Length: 94
Length: 144
Image (cartoon, rainbow over all chains, first blue to last red; front, side, top):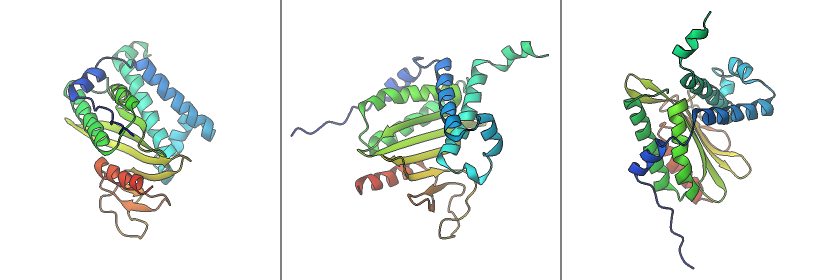
């Protein structure tokens, strides 16, 4: 039987080119995070805002889902901030 | 963007080192080589790397790292490394949450807050180095 060849590892040059090609839009990245947050919300019957106020910073966070949920929640806010920089939002300030 | 200029370059270098470590340790599906750069693009948007990849017929590696810049140095603020079996059980997981000071035998952790949880959820010392986690995952994979 022929031996299966492992897939070719990409070069760093190709890696950088692919990463900087702009395949992933901020909207899609945010959408993916919203989907994940909603999966956790359905699974645990809790809004992310409530989860984040109650769990992170306590020993209960040391569960894979809770740790990933907390990271995802912070990432979501960072992605939103990158889409709507503070300067642009400041025009809506009262 | 959370990262600019040199910070972006440092983030790309860090993610490239993760890619090298994984591809040296495991034979990964071809799709991973196309999906990993997209996961890294997300780092430039959200400062978090997150992906899941099969590392054997019945094991999956899930990695999540959250980055911050301390002056000009990229730091992993929080991470979660998981090896999961087909039934969804965590066979091995590591993180840097600061809630453990001792291992399951009540000995001080050597590199707190970094620690590992084994299949029985026993806490063990861990350096925080992804390569150490990958080596442990390889041991589990070869023992199956």
